[in-house]
Length: 104
Image 1: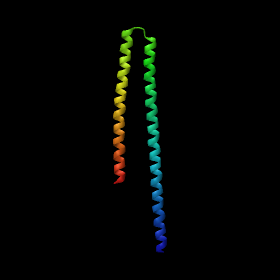
Image 2: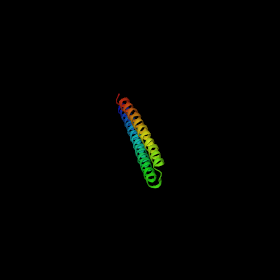
Image 3: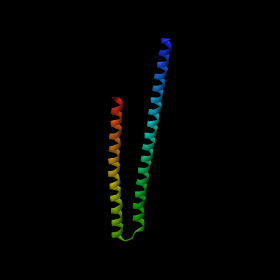
């Protein structure tokens, strides 16, 4: 009878471990998907800004307007870089805290 209880406990423990492993794999997949999407968005935005600069260079004849427009685009680019850096740092801090909590 005691052996049956031990096997039942072992089976329950194995089930719990399998469930935790499955949850961890799912979390990692979601994180990877988010990273890929974020990276793609950043690349697309960078390409868009580069295309805008190229279009301004090739289509605007007035030097003053061209310079002001390029300055605006470059300022947008700088702001986006700052936002990306802040976001990257926040995500790093969140993931570091999660890892530390899991290790405890």
